[in-house]
Image (cartoon, rainbow, N blue to C red; front, side):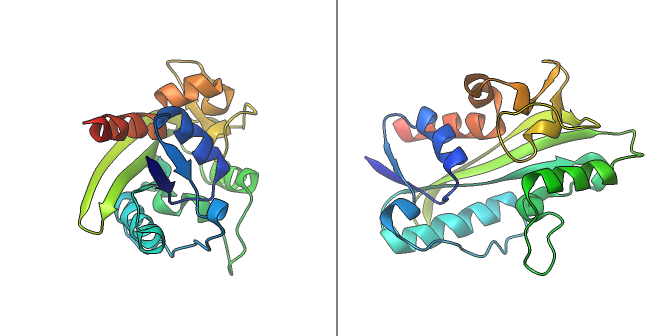
Amino acid sequence: MTLWLATNNEHKKRELEAIFSDYTLRTPASAGLVFDPEETGSSFIENTLIKARALFDLVHEPVIADDSGLCVDALDGRPGIYSARYGSTDGQKLESWERNQLLLKELEKATDRKARFICSMVALFSHDRFYVVQETLEGEIIRESRGTGGFGYDPILYLPDRRCTVAELSEEEKNRISHRGKAGRALARLLSK
């Protein structure tokens, strides 16, 4: 069975291929489709459904979509749903390392550094028929980037129980404990039933 992924992010595709190994995963880009829906929701779940429905309207086949981001307690949950666009101005999107540096600067004097990755994921079969799951990966923001693995905010989210950042985990370990990995496995279990 083919599942369409409502993303053109190859990092996400690789992570999800390991979880949805019984399925063929396709991205819009692999089919030459232009896919860049405007994420106007006020929550991860709303944005997930926006992306899933937009791709479903193009392919008319089952779609997997996710929306994820970093929520920092000391910043009242920011960057949250704006994680990928955090700090952007006039349509100019910052690079990952620039977003990380901005966040570290904003937290310079913060003592509460608790944060979490959140991932909302949906398997959509029609506009009104879908499964939604949401998971987290809890940690804290360290004071400088560490590690070369992963992407996005991975180098600054420290996992105290593992004594490393997400970027210092092996790909297999990250997939096992990450917010996206947990959400994907929960969704895969639902699909298998």
